[in-house]
Amino acid sequence: MATMADVARSAGVSVATVSHVLNDTRPVLPRTRQAVLDAIEELGYTPNTLARSLVTARTRSIGLAVSAISNPYFTEILQGVEAAALEHGYSLLIADPHDDPGHERKVVQLLHERRVDGMIVAPSADPRDLVAYLGRHRVPAVFLDRVLDVPEGDGAPRFDQVCAESAEPTTRLVTHLSGLGHRRIGLVAGRPGLSTTRERITGYRHGLAAAGLPYDERLLVHGDSEADGGARATAALLSLAVPPTALVTANNAMTIGALRALRDHGLSVPADLALCCFDDFAWADLFSPRLTAVAQPSRELGAQAVRLLLERLAAPDRPARTLRLPCAFVHRTSCGCPEQPQRASAKAHERSLP
Image 1 (tube, rainbow, N blue to C red):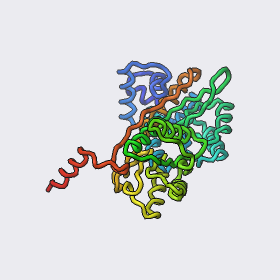
Image 2 (image 1 turned 135 degrees about the vertical axis):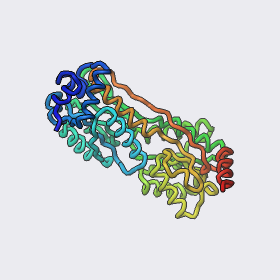
Image 3 (image 1 turned 30 degrees about the vertical axis):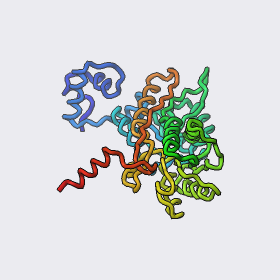
Image 4 (image 1 turned 90 degrees about the vertical axis):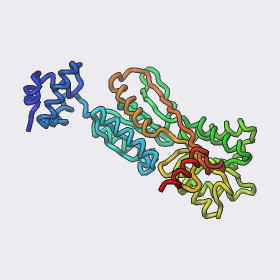
């Protein structure tokens, strides 16, 4: 098995230089770095990660705590985190807090005990224990997708945050539906206490106000960010004496639940009820009708979380940053609009192909 000394001899450098290349502990000339990397590749040298961590006090690992990993949205975030971590030579330890504050605190402690260099966490609706633990142990951390109002001052923890815009895109969904003539627009909102839920409710109310429509609290029902909850919330809206004619669902899981409830009530989209949803997903274009949606930059959210964490590790005392990434409005047909001309012409072209 090749050793670091073997790499140094092959590259014509000192063992210390090989160490600096491997650990990024000192700038190395590009041609020297490349010579070391070429020698590593040629000899098949594998660094001793455990020994390196004892010397550098770093494990080059990141803890990721996000709930509902099976959700396509968080799966894409995970892909973004993993790709960015690997790009910078970090491994990933993953845990699912199940959106439960008590379990969240336990999994974060377990990740910390594994000596991860820092953590990326999508906080629960009640993250007080989480914040207290991270602050008490001074764990470098980035909050992902859901942001917290954590004051920064002398002695206060510094937490970076990255999320997508939530309010303005939801406003756009509501104003789009109102522009189609809808006057009773319902919202299936997410789990109470989450920042994404608050912001999408804010966007919903701004959209109603912009359209000159009154806010009716009966048209806002929480689906708890899950498919079953989305189905129950939609059924509750349909049971109203005057049900909505259009619906906004605030995440992809609740969209599935809403579609199930509409099917169970014998209703079709958009003939009986127009539908717009927050979160685009791979098969949204395959539904009939195709789902009009807000698409979040999920992979970029994951990649940016890693970059923020690495910046925090490099400069522990810098001011905390909150990044908000823009979303895209994906206009399809579940809202009641006709097929877009470019889409329709593309389909006609496909049909004409031999």
